[in-house]
Length: 458
Picture 1 (spheres, rainbow, N blue to C red):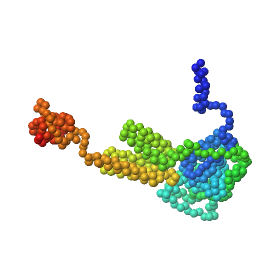
Picture 2 (picture 1 turned 60 degrees about the vertical axis):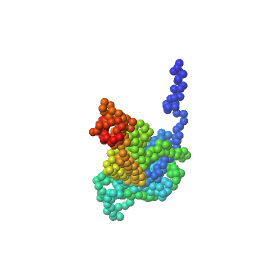
Picture 3 (picture 1 turned 45 degrees about the horizontal axis):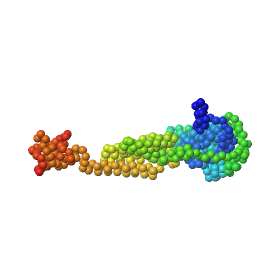
Picture 4 (picture 1 turned 30 degrees about the horizontal axis):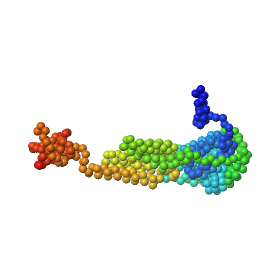
């Protein structure tokens, strides 16, 4: 009987905790056109938002997914994650470079090649797909020999001799093979794709259509949908005819998870979180039992580690940052006249500068942030060292050493041994001269529980 009484409560609890229930209505966006946006630099947050949007559209049985693209490029790892999601999508994905003046540069070119349909607005461009790490300012970039105009035409593969180091050529060849594979899959111009990688070539929307780099040009979203109507595309080994007329348009905006990921994967935020975490743990270990600094520090450290996991972090830079902080803390606990502290500041600054293993400005730790934190850490170190130096110059005020040179009075004799009252306590005293009650003495040394004194008189 008790179980029967609890049955309604158990059913309610199961429904609240997500127990499977029969579907009573279609999911939001079923049969519609999902609109996603790739604006700005492609990073872990935007790749996560777009990949989960593609999965959600497939779950909602959407008719098509349109990714509106306006990006200067982004991280290689994030780009490849997004390309994998596009290639695995059972729903047609249309890449649309829009509005006028937008671009699909660098990583955006790969994404556009991966889409089932590639479209652009007038006055847009794509290309410059050379991996950013190869174009680092510190690396030499010799100019290739210019081919004859008759033998080299726009859209044909590059024929210049290999340039750069072996590692650079490996990265370039890997990128060429990757984008050529996408071009062959979508039946687009693979020769120009190779040229975009090797030479950083770019195209306007009109020239891209002429060279069969893209499939169509559309002035706006309505024009794009009208041009897509009845178009046949191959997806999952089958030919699908697009029928988008009258379909609802669903704007899929980033949710709280994407927004939160965008915040913590900002290199400056991740960098500050790491330092807050380290300082919090140091303060907790220095003052056990506080609790709050340790909790805050642990949370910040875990968030920073998660961010560094998806960011292109140089572990040499991370090691130098940690070493620099360790040296500054060691200077505070074991002063070395600034040697450890100065070395720590230098290691901290150098490690912070090389912390991000990419040349993309959007994923570099800002130099003002580095300098501000370095100056703050150095200032804190100077403050601690100043306090240590002042404490060393102050007179000893506690312990048995504080009794040296203190004067007292012989209060009584006990079995012939004088007892001297010092600061309210009676001490046994040894003296080269005989002492009597009332004699004043000065303490020369403390040996265990006995004092060595010098007689001053009465």
